[in-house]
Structure formats: structure tokens, C-alpha cells
Length: 577
Image (cartoon, rainbow, N blue to C red; front, side, top):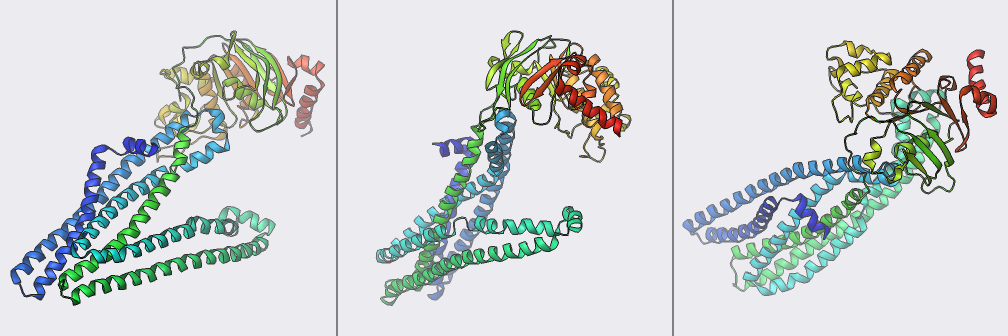
């Protein structure tokens, strides 16, 4: 059973047993307190001084013990929250990093990831609900024991009423289930429109397009509708809560009448009468809290289902250190790819060959499939059909860790890591990279930001996460990502629009550096700027998901009208400017 497995993993046996003991003691003490309270009253009424002070002292000790146990339960819950919350969050982060890339691009992954974020909060509610069930369950048993010791018929008389109270609680839960989520959903559009009207980030367009009046009118309509819906929800909730209050009053009256007959007959003393009445009320409250606790426990556990579904997502194999640079030949044979859920392929019948030490370029319009092809090469996607061959081996049959030894990449949407310059450029490296090698690559790329000349040098933290942190320009961040690819011990490099943030002079410098820095590697360069790829040994022209032609720049200008048109169109933009 998953619940028991979860308890064994996240609820340490010693701590949980201690929690059970404290909960049972917390449930028993109120009944003991009520019983002793009756003895105190009888001793006071009968003028038995010694007995009065003795019972009062015991009563105070029981009261103090209950407070102490309450503090211990809170401390235990806080300790559990800190420990288990950290472990749940750590496991979520580990899992997110281990999930297959193709899965991370699905809507289901991001939905489960967002829901899994609430696992620590749900576990906190779950732990609190377990404590509530244990305490109130024990309180019910001890209250019934007190009443049975006084009068069996009183217990028999109030039992049907407790059943009616349980029915009312269930009805209230059904009527108000999701009350706050429905309330918030009704206000969602209103809140969004409110941000358009009030928040600073929209102020410029509010003034420029003068949409304030139109959005304000929509806000009023949406707010009026949401208000009406929420008033209905509130009235329904209030109606059920009034029924519960009425039931509580009726229950108390009947309990008093059942006990008054015993008092009138002289069967019980005024102290015992008081004890029995308190026990009857405690029983009603415990019954209500027990249902609330059980309902909360089931609800929290239901919410945890998303966390377990997230942990079941398929993972990549664990990475292994690269075995070092080796020269590889990469061949694509009739490769095609269709995104899951789509009917039309993004790539069709792609066949090409890339040899070590040569530099290749891939060009084409937006949406032609260039980035998809890059992700197929590095193993983030698997071909729908066809094969990617490296040195005669189909890479789809290779373990993921072995494929990682082959390819490195720079994608157009690279991330700016809040780490030091050295950590950014050696991120993921299994071997130490000599500082001389790092600076050699930086010089070749003309990467000399002001941060390197500040105290700390290569160990200067970036992204302004600390007082001493520095930041880089967009072009400098891009060069840092390129340097990371160059310094990796992979045999092939795929660079997808790596120079998008560079000015033309810096771009030309970086292109010259590519040929030198990546001279031993098989390199595929993807770009929209055709003037920059002229130096490639071979250029692949991609159009509508297919290789239209390939060859040198001169060959394509003479034999591929589509390429020539693209090149001339870009050239004229500069000349006409």
C-alpha cells in the first residue's frame, strides 16, 4: 500500500511512535481532567477541605501536563516539517533534473512539476491530520468511557445524535468542498484585469493605447458576475454552518435532560453531573474533529498523488565522465521527426554526412526545423524514423551516457547561471580545466569583460546574487556559453544561433575563432546570417523540413536559387541601408 510505504520512508519510526504516544496521552488527559473536575466540585460543595485541595492539585497537574504535551506535539510537527519538507523538495529537484528532455517539453511535465511543488505543504497538512485523528479518536474513546462509567442510557441516548452530527458534517463537506478554489476561480479574470489597470508594467501601453476605460468596463462586468457567484457560495456555506450550530444546541439540551434525571433522582452528585455534561460535549466535538481530520487526511493524500505521478516520469541514465576527445563521423540516414500529437512531420528524409575536422553550416527560414534537427543530433529527441549514425553505430541504440560523450552544444536560448565565471565556463566538466586553457579560449573569443579585471577574476560571481557579484552584457553571456562548449571534452559541437547577441565585428572575430578552437571536432553551425557561414566547408540548406541542397557557398550561389535569394536579400539589406 502506497500510504504505508510513504510513512516508512518519510516518517522515522522512533519519531512517529513518539508522536502516537503523545497523541494518545493528549486524547486521554481531557477525559481525566473532566473526571477530576467533578471530584473537585463535589469536595467543594461538601466542604471536604483536604480532599478539595488534593483534587485541585491533581487537576492542575493534569492541566499542566496537557499543555506540555501540546507543546511537544507542536515541536514534533515543526521538526517533521523541516526534515520531510527538505527531503521532498530535494527529491523533486533531483527528479526534475533526471527526467528525459523530450518529457520536459510536454505540458504534463510542467503541470506535474508545479503540483509537486506543493508536496511539502501537503505533507505538513497530512502530518497534522494524522495527529488530529489520533488525538480525537482517543478523546472519543476516553469520553465514552467516562460516560459509560456514569450511565449507560445516557450514552445510548446521545449516540443517534452523534450519527446525525456526522451526517451534517459530511453534508457540509460535500457542499463546501473546493469552496475557496471556486471562490478564487471566480475572481481570476477580475484579478487579471485589475493588474492591467493598476500595475506599473502596463502603464506605458495604458497611456499609449488608452485602453483603461475599456478594461475598466470589463472589470466591472466580471467583478459583478464573480460577486454574485461567490455570494451564492457563501450563502450555501452559511446555511449548513447554521444547521450545525442548531444541532449543537439541540444536542446539548438533550444531553442535559438525560443527565438531569439522574441528578434529580439523586443517582449522581453535582460534580458527577458536571463531569458527564462536559464529557458529552467533548464527545460531540471530538466526533466532529475526527471527521474533519479524516477528511483533511484523505484530501492531503489525494493531493500528494501528483507528486508520486511526477516521480514516475521516465528518466535519463545517470551521466558518466567523458572518455576524452575523439574524432567522429556523423551520418543522418533518412531521418524524420514528428512531434507527439502532431500529424505533420517537422523533418522528413534528412540525409547528410559530417566528417571530423570539418565545419558545416545549416541554414533556412524560421520554422524550417533547424533547432529540431540540432536537438535530434545531441539526443534530446529521438527520430520518428531513420537513423543517426556515429562511426558506424546507431546512436539511438547507445546508452544516454555514451551519447553525452559525443556531443556538446550551444543553443540560442542558453541560460545565464548565477555562478562564478569559472563555474559557468566549466559547468558539467568532470575534470578540472586548467586556468591557462580557460584564458586561452577567452582570448581567442575576445572575451574580456570588466568582471575579469575585478577582484576575484575567474571566481567573480555573476547575476548580482551577492553584493560582490557582477553582470555581463548579452553578447558577453553568449561568448561565455560558447567558451563552455569549446572547453567541453566532446567530439562534436552543435551551435544553434550562438552569435545572435553579437555585433557584426564581434561575430566575425568569433567565427574566425571557431575554426581554430574547434578544428579537431565535427562542427555543425546553425545561423540565419548567411554572410557569416560562407567560411563553412559545407552548407546544408533546409526548407520545409527537408534538405534542399548542400555544398560550398560558391556552389550554392550558382546552383541553389533558394539559397542565392536568401543571401542576396540579406546582402541588399546592408547595402540599401
